[in-house]
Length: 506
Image (cartoon, rainbow, N blue to C red; front, top):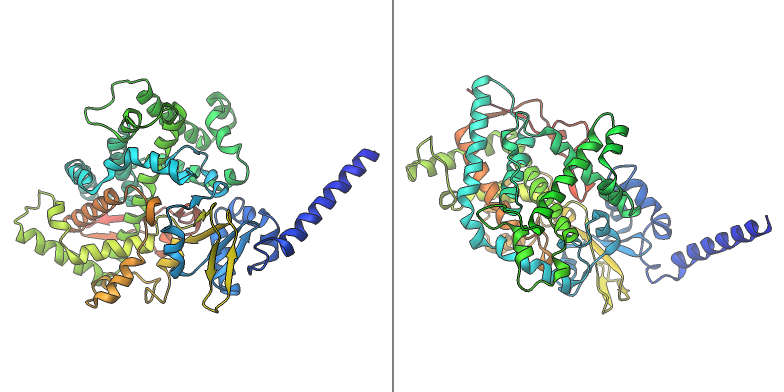
C-alpha cells in the first residue's frame, strides 16, 4: 500500500510538473491558444477520433478567437496566413511531423517519410511515371475508362435509373490508378452498384487514421488480425471488408516481390522494385505494401471527390451548366467530333471555361483538408504576425498550415465559399497570378502530390465528355451532400449522405 501511495504521488507530481512546464516554460508558451490544447493531446484526440475528424473546425475556431497563429497541441503551432506558405512548404529541408503522419500506419511509404533525403530517394523511383510527358502517353487508357463510364450512364439513362455518380467517379479513379500502378486492375466500373461496398471501406479505413495517430497499435492490428476472427466478431461485414481490402493490397505487393507475371506494361510498384539505385531495404515486401496502399488510396478518393463536387456545382447552377455545354458543343463542332466519339486532350486542354471549372473544383474540393505539419530540425524558424509580433521557434518545432485555409481566404478569393469559375477568367494578369499562386490542391514544393498531372487529365476528360454527351439533373442531392464534415486527411461528407446522384435526361 505504501508503494502504491508513493507511485501515485510520483505520477501526480510528474503530471503537475508537465502542466506547469508546458503552460509557462515551454518554447511555445507565448503562442496564443487554449490552455487545454497546450497541455496535452487529449483535446485533439477527442475531436479527431471519437468526434470523427472535426478538430480542423476547432482549429478554425481558435484562429477566429486568437488570430493567425495558435498552439494546437503541446508541440505544434498552426498558422493561418498565406504569406507564410512558401516559408513552410517551399523549404526542402523541412521534415514531416512523425506524430501526425504516423497515423497513416504506413511509415515506409513516400507520403509518410519523415526525412527529406529519404523522401527524395523514394519519390525519385516513381517520379518518371507521373511526369507530364508520361501521363500524356496514358491518355488512350484513361479515355477508354471514361468511355466505359459513358456507356454505363447511357444504359442507366435508357433504363430510367439514377446514377450514383460519386461512387462511379471513385470506381473510374480506382480503375485508372490500379491499371497504371499495380499488378491487378480492379475493374470497378463493371460493378452493378459502382462498388458501393468498397467505397464505404475506403471511407472507414481513412477514419482509422485519426485513431491510429494516438494509438499506434490500431492499424497494425487491423492488418494482422486473422480473418476468421474478424468474420466471427463482425456480423455486419464492414470490418471484414476492410481486412479483405488490406489483404488484396498485400497480395498486389507480394506479386511484385515474387516476380510474378503482372502486366505487359510497367507499373509504378514494379518500377520501385526494379529501380537500379534503390538499396535492398527499399524493396522489401513491407515497404512495397505501404507504397501500394498510398498509391491506390491517393489516386482514388481525392480525384473521385473532386469530380463529384464539380458535377454538383455545375448542374446546380444553370448559368455555369449552359456556359460549359456551349463551349463543349462549339469545340466538338470545330474539330468535327461525332456524338459517338470522345473529346480528347488536344481539344479539352485548350478550353478556357472548362479549365476554369476544373480549377474552381480543385479549390473548393481541397483534396487534403486537414493540416500539413512540418518541422525544421536544423534551424530556428520565425513567424511575424500582421500585428507585428514575431514568434521564434527552436529546431524541431512542428509548424502546420492547411490548404483549406488558403483556398477559402476571402482576401485572395472573393466570395470564397461560392463556386465561381469566372474568377479564373480575369484579364488582369497580376490578379490572375495571385489566384494561381494560391491554388495549391496538390500541396507545394518537393512534397507536392506526384499524381497531379494524372488527376488533372482525368478531371478534364471526364467533365468534358460527360457534360457534352449527357443532359443531367440532380437526384435528391443538395449542397449538404457535398459539404466537408470530416477530416480523415482527405475531406469526407456527412456519414448519412448518399453522395451526389444524378439522372441523365432522355
